[in-house]
Image (cartoon, rainbow, N blue to C red; front, side, top):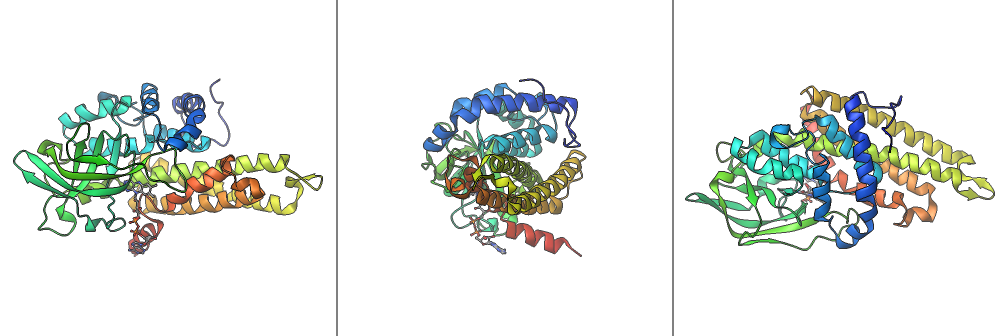
Length: 387
Ligand SMILES: Cc1cc2nc3c(=O)[nH]c(=O)nc-3n(C[C@H](O)[C@H](O)[C@H](O)COP(=O)(O)OP(=O)(O)OC[C@H]3O[C@@H](n4cnc5c(N)ncnc54)[C@H](O)[C@@H]3O)c2cc1C
């Protein structure tokens, strides 16, 4: 594949080097990830081998400094990965891998960074972030999993649910209550659990979802699991809630970037389809309703893209505030779903068939309004920030 040419519709944060990176990522996604999608959906998880290949390409931690094995790029590189995966309709664990790595980068000791980040960048160690529990989703203060200090170890008891990358995870960034006497945010800590061969640790079978089945989402169980006290993230116990708040903008922006890219791709695919689909002797594009729907969807996708690009620029300058990240997450995921749904309608019955990418986009994108903080929680945050 030749390098992608500069286009007038290119994001402002695209440099020559980022454009080159996009070429490499696109080629990899098309040749190494797309062909395996049906099998991954059937087995409910990606192949471990795919992480190794993505790691060899520098696609897993592109915005982590090369001192720790990362690509040495910026969030622009991570945005390229998110956009290219979304464009191809590939659900893969690269985004969560990067989110976990950023927790380690931000709060890990030098020793922890050197131990975990290079194998994560190579795809040898897969990361997961485990916050949600059956009784604690939006309200993380209700977390019941405990990590009781016993000498130089924590003893972890409890369970987590809906954990992305759970099947492959060798490093689980776990939110647990380290001080049972403190009920509020100060009682929570983040502890990195190295899961390989760990007694008392168990992973449930990947959960059956309405979409995203090519990617593992699991329950995790901890029964008297012993973790070295040195695996705590941060300098003291009780910093977990603050650490999470600090990283939310990254996670929410990542979701928004993928949503904006999916919305654009849905419009592109549908435009092609309606030009080819003949109804009563005329292409579907020649019916006025089709053009009105597509014009609206394309406009909304473009408006969303401009806002996401603005947020990326802000993030690159270290200025993205949590409220703008929440706005991007909420607005882009709702707009994305509306666009995909309207596009699907233009496919008629074919849009309901999973062999068509638009059907998979519809099922895959629905959850984006729920995870990384539900959109209702985003709206609460946005509303309370207005003075
Ligand atoms: C596919 C998938 C992948 C996921 N990956 C991960 C992961 O990797 N790690 C992880 O820790 N979690 C993960 N999650 C969990 C996800 O973050 C939670 O599902 C989400 O935070 C919502 O929590 P809940 O499901 O308990 O819903 P609830 O909190 O029970 O919410 C139910 C409804 O109540 C609304 N609600 C809740 N509180 C308020 C409020 N204060 N005001 C108004 N409305 C409110 C919600 O918006 C929602 O509509 C994943 C979930 C899914 C489905």
